[in-house]
Length: 140
Image (cartoon, rainbow, N blue to C red; front, side, top):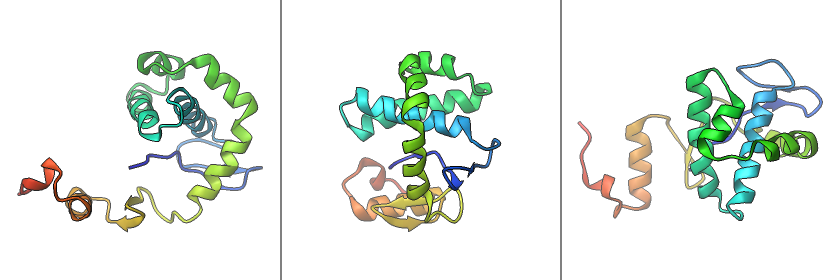
């Protein structure tokens, strides 16, 4: 599973749902993922293990970037450096990644779109790997 910042529009005038252009919080999210991925030597799942708690912190506390960086162990100086040097390229990458998305949340399992509800996601995951422990239980 991959959780991504969502942007649309163009690199010169990006749009997002929760803030005005140029979507600084979304760009900060991109940099947090970038910094966490570098720190994890390219391991995307290890980076997500930093990004998801960071996102929960941000959404639960009114977006205190430095506080959330410290809470989950993301280097604030590296994020600030990324915003100055890498954010423009990252924004272009995310615009391309997000281009096929027509609604949020968009949920995919193994590259196939799945309805964004627990039962549908569980069914798709368990169809992919029925040996997972959660696949042995029945949801009522």
